[in-house]
Image 1 (cartoon, helix red, strand yellow):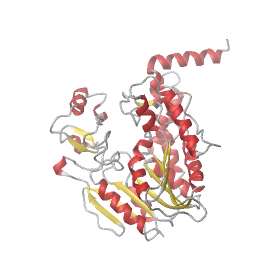
Image 2 (spheres, one colour):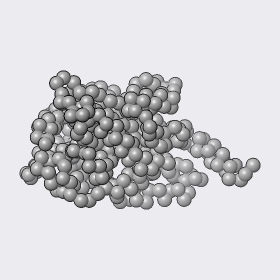
Image 3 (cartoon, helix red, strand yellow):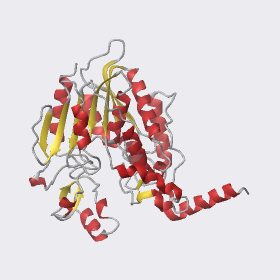
Image 4 (cartoon, helix red, strand yellow):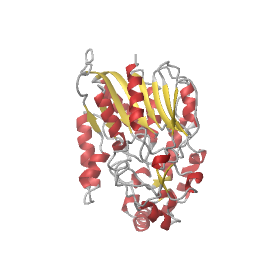
Length: 394
């Protein structure tokens, strides 16, 4: 047997033994596979793939449905296009290690407001964390470009809406796609820690020590988001931010971001909005300190009566009534206590009184048991601001 083949098999065996199946690539989700398909066929093929990957799991149908791409058609009295079925269409792009589930409430909002809606699943997502090990951000960009093409076939006006990494991908697409008429950006990931630049140095030795490829290996209890996080995901996210255009933006931009954000550098969003020169551009800014600037709508992120200490990166696009992440949702985020404080982790997960909610900052952690905030208590007000923005679109 060839030595290289023998070594590869030994490595695969070692990976399986040390990390388990979910921390290895599935072999089914490392590239964008929608080329040549209609959007409906792409949705069906992706659902079939998700069903196969999650075969035998509890809530298999729920997992496949929540992670799958989807499409919606406008409700009620909507404006038709000149030579196309619809005047306006919006492409929704989820964030890093997230899924289209996170965009479903926004999708319903756009549907009610007359938009044709399409939401893509970024390659490497929705299956198992190991699919991020060999992912390249350009595959994500391919998915967004393809989705923009499909939507432009049906709508006169093309809009992009992205959360976190999806916001960065939306800006990247708009930078070279003159069909894009406006942007909706939520918790934009325009700048992350510079340490991510070196994240893939682990490849020098992780072939021998597979655990070295991971920042964290969690239980992955969340049905619609990876809890485990590999170093390559950080490296690809950093590479994406470096590819973003730095010139002025002349189309309308609606952005929602939080000064409390612990995942991305929210100051980069402020700098981006300074380059958004269109008079209709608006920023909804969640912060504990009041901001008075033109085109900025300040929202106090502290809600004492709900024991909310501030907003969080994870909270912006989810309303309180969401059955998974909302006030009474079946998922709570206490990952910041792992792996070193399992007692606090278990107490945090228990639905006991006295829990605080917010971003995982040191100051918040000193308040007592803290759950990372997963919903936006001001979601209804955010939708109202979006509606006003849409009414002013040219």
